Length: 304
Ligand SMILES: [Fe+2]
Image (cartoon, rainbow, N blue to C red; front, side):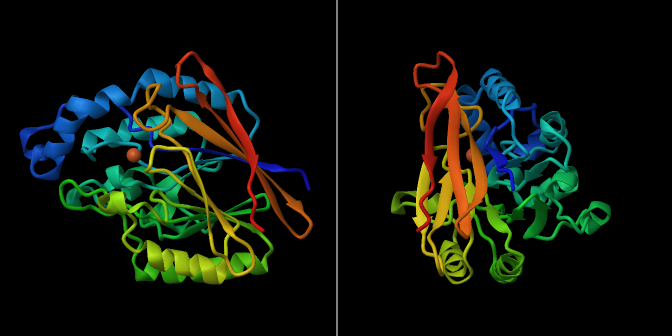
């Protein structure tokens, strides 16, 4: 079986921010809008993102995962340009999306991702394309991979950036993980929020991360991919037989040197090896000096 290469980018935070109507700036959006002009609009660059995407397109890969935060304060006008950007990456067959907290920033926008980007968010059964009601988690089979998409995107109070899966989604995740294990698929879980985070990031955490970690410990997964932290992160969670690698990628638009990490993306080269899955991660992105995009690192994930 030839290796399957999965590309992963996240958190483009597409600009420029459209001019909102006064009524749209009530509550949390007002803070987010000020924050964009004070800080975020200078951190995230369309030119940087364009160079990242151009570099990605020069690589050979089989599928692309995008782990959320396409938009910023969930203004209705932000979604069509974001769809155009998604389409510029590839068709919904070749690109899989999960939403981030900025994609469902306020209660009125809670279902905007499903409404506007549904083709990129539905599973192989396809029923959600007509109903605009994607069910999370969704399942897409691509080569030897089972791509399992979760939504941790829930509207929260001002100054909060937490995420939540809910008991129903976690129960369905457990069933899917078991079913895909029986099919000997390489289970890749896509989620915006990391399943665990530092205590200092309490307001940005996955609220039911403990339940997700317990589910992974019991049912296993070959890889968990996330965004949200805007940083290169590799960690491991307990699994039933092997450890579960968890990999976070920086924002694809963060100007070098980067408040967190400068813009980057990952390529995961996945192939069967000795009854398990070997996964080599190649990170490509801007060096801190911002001169150009290079290979930043290459490592093989250690699950045993
Ligand atoms: Fe983000």
